[in-house]
Amino acid sequence: GENVEQHPSTLSVQEGDSAVIKCTYSDSASNYFPWYKQELGKRPQLIIDIRSNVGEKKDQRIAVTLNKTAKHFSLHITETQPEDSAVYFCAASRSLGGSNYKLTFGKGTLLTVNP
Amino acid sequence: NAGVTQTPKFQVLKTGQSMTLQCAQDMNHEYMSWYRQDPGMGLRLIHYSVGAGITDQGEVPNGYNVSRSTTEDFPLRLLSAAPSQTSVYFCASRPDRSSYEQYFGPGTRLTVT
Image (cartoon, rainbow over all chains, first blue to last red; front, side):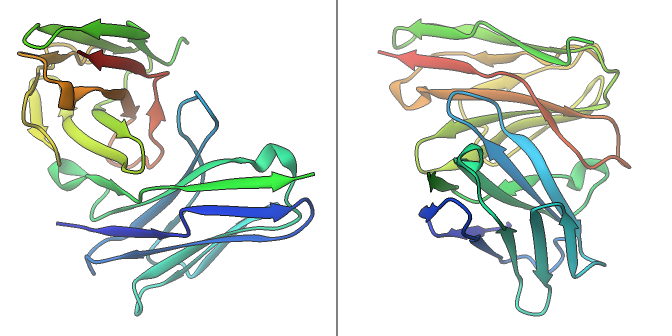
């Protein structure tokens, strides 16, 4: 089955700096890669996702890049703010439809943005 | 819309007891899933359903049963609770095969002593 590795497990940055979280996946057939943000005691929420036919996607201060050849994808947060502090999870899925749909998550990155 | 709801929010069980974690969604979503979250382990898929009457196993199904008799409800049953099942459980749903985003419920924190 799919295996998703996520690094680093913890990341501390100063407010205004950029943060980068990296994930690798094992199944070359995976084609959907979402990122979730989970604040302390809250539910995970989707912040951005990318599909395998796209190399990069941006949404304001957040961007995700995908390298299918190397089987890795990254989350980039620019101009970090204290409210960006949370646990971030990457995930990968082989198929969006039918019984093949299973999201495999990385173990998470605790991002702390220091004022 | 209430979205995805879960009950109870907290539960303490003794080893060997059984219980059902409830999950409901009012968005008419076809797909529903159960995950468990343990410290340092991310979210792991327990069981999922692609529609009423259809369920399948995820990554960590042992010790859990599910059923999907209606579109709205997807209960998770612990038959004989074990300390290893101490975790936070999240239910999630998504509309159908063409929709990507999963919507998570607020979670149930379960402790088995």
